[in-house]
Length: 362
View (cartoon, rainbow, N blue to C red):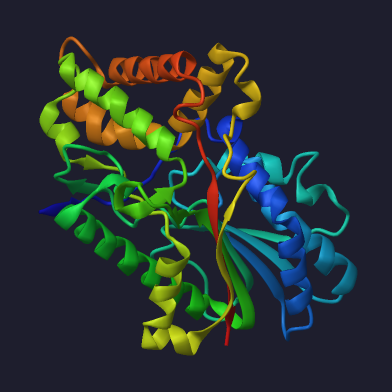
């Protein structure tokens, strides 16, 4: 049996301070975004850039900036707007402080109209045919709902097997198709959707013959979870039924959702669908391997930023008692997590494979 809660991710903590991967990804794709801006700059009507799942950090600024630079120089007579779209729990004050700060795009003399759309990108967020370029970076791999699925051997999708994996994939494929259909309604004809998410690649010998981005990180989370269950700090029932509500698509999975859905085939033209290795797969914090303590601190900060709230809601709060509050359990969990990375540098490296999907609205 599989149960879902309202959201898979909400209230991520310390995001901007620990969003190195997100910022680097936005910067790495700046030329692609600028090219898309050139392609749409002569479309009729206003130009709008909407960033879905924007988050509160500098990566949201770097995602938008390349398109604005193009439009400001080539489309001075057109109304230009930016919409940052995310859930109610996003730190909107932090984001707007960056947008209007010295390094934000509103510091330029030519200022776009700035908007926010608050809700889930698994629902409608913008008016019909209002968006020229839509981006969704490091967000669409989160499913629409939290997941409770009996899987005592793992806490993440890539190591699921049998019926549990089948059920999880059904949720992921449903959400991918729903996300694309909603964005198609919001995009102008000729507009582009650019999704950049964590991805997966075929690899013989891996569980399910698939290597997914960040596999070391999630296996480290699993190791710490097991240790705290064995020490009586986390309830076994909570751990056995906890799986992170996310799925990192392979090229084949991303393509399948479009090519085998009659409606999507009529809505989109595929420009690009590929999974790329970032720094040859690499280690996100590999430049700190000579300092194990710093390596552990950086990996713990990065992981806590995106995983802390999910772990709190599905593991720490159900396991709390008069001796151990959820705050204390969270602190102990990430103390062990940081120590594990310091003790075994690079064993749990955060490898990076990114799915890039660029679709043109017909």
